[in-house]
Length: 469
Image 1 (cartoon, rainbow, N blue to C red):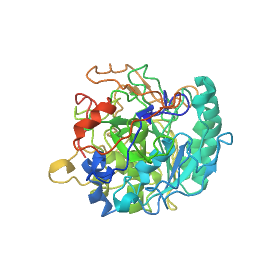
Image 2: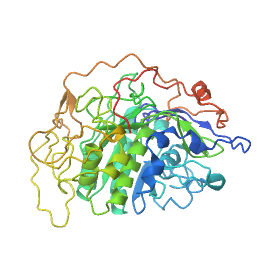
Image 3: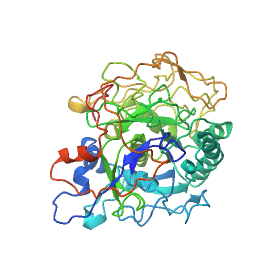
Image 4: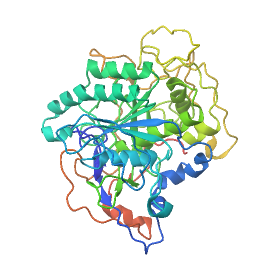
């Protein structure tokens, strides 16, 4: 599976340029290492520590993608019945026509059940997956046709997800334009208590094209970082980026269209988005009475901000998501009915006792909620971004926080920051546009250095890094 982008001509060019070098992970009993040993992102995020507090139980995450295979050994029992919006593709929402959707589900809710518990894990292994299958937009051969198809079907997918209990909606794909219908569906989701996370795209070194729904007001746009906490070279950057998560050398469960073994290694903002969605699921499971606004506010307040001292950058947004800190020292979640990001102009979901909030247009995040209790030392320390209601608002650097003419455009950068040249580009094939033929079998190697041969997208230097996990 190449990198993670969109199947709308831009998951290969769009959403999370899934230009993965999706290489299958061969089952090799003779080797001592398991897939979990190679899931570096779970190790640095201290997943086992988090799982003593929350595993995402009781939270449903909708995966709007190309289908999710419920028979993958690491996803059995996690995948619900969903919706198939791709009737021309074989099968239904449980038929993953290119392997990508199962990969995102694996990153979110993989159980590690394969081989007697030595399989691959997701960050929220007790969350449920609601699969919603969209057609392969890459088959249309025209990005504008792909965008039209996406903008017709994605709103239906979002509304279905909300109406069927999904608190979190993961959209690891994107197209060149949004629509009033898409914006309306996002508004529908927020007002009914859900959160939407979408990949910013994998076009950072090739045009840096803005993609939707990541750039749609109210959607949390996600970029990817590597092991050194620097943004990956392929990550699309701009004012639409709200946060970042790991998105390089990602070992996880995936569909058989990507790997006969059901295990893959990939990179891209698709993967990062899945981890952001899983992070929200962990927090929501711990605090089931919180609204979507409160969950997102705590994610932002406990985020690992840019090491430059900026409150926000166009590369990692407000910083790298840190669910462990959010679970350990969440602080005051703030008002239930106030969306914490500046691009959404009206109040979203409300608690039963909350008074209606008047929308006053887009504004910078405010800080009336109390700061999260900071840990005394180590990587628990953080300069909190206080997202609440009131004065002292966090300013979105380099961005005009205004909703553009067609309402579906995100805040536009006043003067885009030049992209740093320090990182290497990805060489993977576009995910939606081309098929990866004869993927190399991938067995857990004896040393991590062997990974670099088949996945040349590792950032060479920390660039625009965030604080650690």
